[in-house]
Amino acid sequence: MESIKEFYLTGEGFSESRLYEMKMLCREFFPGADIRQDPCDCNLIWKDGVWTLTEKNGRILRTKAAGRTDAFGNLGGDLEKNREKVGLYSLLKEQTGKEIPWGILTGVRPTKMVYEGLEHGLAPDEIKKTLETGFLLRKDKANLAVEVAQRERDLLQNHRGTDLDLYVGIPFCPSRCAYCSFVSYDFHTLGDVMERYTTALEREIRSCRSMRGKRRLRSFYMGGGTPTALTPDQLERVLYAVQESFGFENLTEATVEAGRPDTIDKEHLQVLQRFGIGRISVNPQTMNQETLVRIGRRHTVEDTRRAFALAREMGFDNINMDFIVGLPGEGLQEVAYSMEEVEKLCPDSLTVHTLAVKRSSRLREEGQTDAILGQTETEKMIRHCAETAQRLGMHPYYLYRQKNMAGNFENVGYSLPHKECLYNIEIMEERQSILAMGAGAVSKFYEPERNRLERIPNVKNVEEYILRVDEMVERKERRFFI
Ligand code: SF4
Image 1: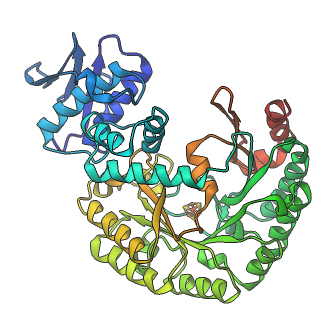
Image 2: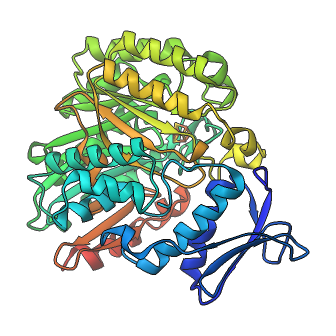
Image 3: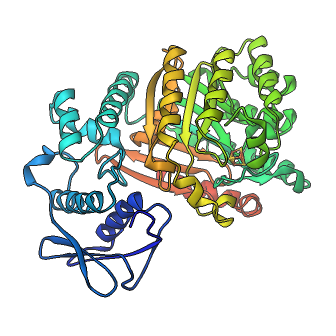
């Protein structure tokens, strides 16, 4: 049953969304399994308050009733749904012998639950206990969720729901990584597209300037893609348009995700310095050359060391590095080597992602998902990274989970004190408006009075974006001019 490749799930009275959540919980036990529309060898049926697991011929393998009503301490919204999830979790745990680190939490940010608890006046220890006993989180995960949420709350204490963040997306990269699911084009294949894109983006940025209204600006974040894939001149034009329209001097932080080390050179860094960009990322993902080749990043480990040293030499004192745990062909030994190398460089923050194999990635298309999702070493690798971050004097300050992550774990941002990226927290917690510009960028309009967030996406395709840039502005105008 542990190596189940397909399953069928049905529930008496379940809505579409309830059914979806239950299926997502099953996926945590059966990574990569297909969800069938008709009964198969593994059938999960909710009826009359009981879960039943049957084989295709109807033979009952196991049954389980819903969880206890009093275990959730007013957290997590829909009580009935949570009770049903606990029943399903317990049944699958008994059947497979597996324990899922984040228990029944699917489709909800762990820190959101902690905020809810704090707002109800619960003490951190009470919240941890409820997460463990009600939502079946493992102790270390409950501790992590509470620690990160408390830190986030401290970091965002001056934040107001009426503030505004700016995001600019550059959807170009020097090659496409095998696991990439972002909007990103290999710029070697594009002719004059980057130039036309820069012009369209300048136009969108300038047209959005009055949407700020009376809002206080907080953060500027330029991501992608790889912003430094632009030529220094194009990068300068985009940053100038932002400066002219919104002013960097009002911002509390400005980040450019330089990202791919093979795009980072003195000219690009000088442009960033001219605009006062305080925080950059130099993202190795791994310090093992063979893995870089395997995942199609087409830069070298030496590029990473060179780019990092150059940025330091030029005075950048807030550099983040991203790593991915669970890359194909990597085990504890490879991750330990990457961490050894990172300790020599001493970045200011470290973001440790667990590989998520998404539908639009080449890894998924090539069917390499089983080997990756089934990795048993993921846990040890994650722990090793956490220990490295701790040795570097960092603390965890943001946390999120995605679908299809290796071993059902999480992504964690670690940082030295005062080097955290507030934008990273804000984008996860979704309690602030973000004015986002560029192909594939998603603006978020937040109404604090109703605690309601609306997403306003730009088109993803670059040619479409260039053609329809005025429409992208109009889409935002409808919400941001109120
Ligand atoms: S650097 Fe990032 S955005 Fe670019 S291809 Fe790789 S994963 Fe995608």
